[in-house]
Length: 132
Image (cartoon, rainbow, N blue to C red; front, side, top):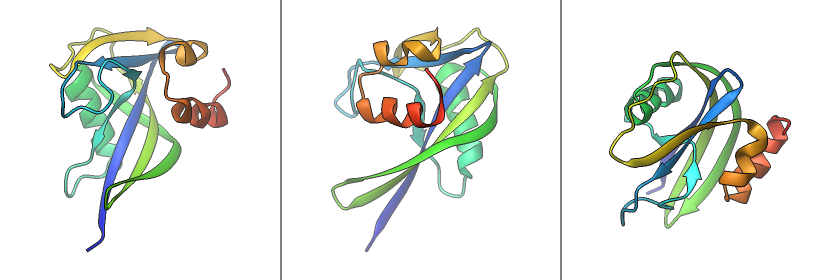
């Protein structure tokens, strides 16, 4: 049986800066302590557009609106094929309440992405759709 999962990533923008997050250490969390963006899996029956807004609310405690799809990506883990969709979203406020899965959050300009995010694939994909 073929297994597929859809994941979404939200680049949350406010006044030219983007929210990046750092997760706590946990055996179940991929890449603890690494900086990245809000992300997660969609729930069964949920649209990817609604999922990214939900994840932003759950992880950052803020409301947002989805603006556009920036890029897509795929990868395999074991026998599961993952399809990823990266969205640019606009924050409707800047005061955040982090979920317990997150250790830190900060607002950065795009030219600071490579300083904090050490996943070269993410930086490469972002450079294809943004200037920094």
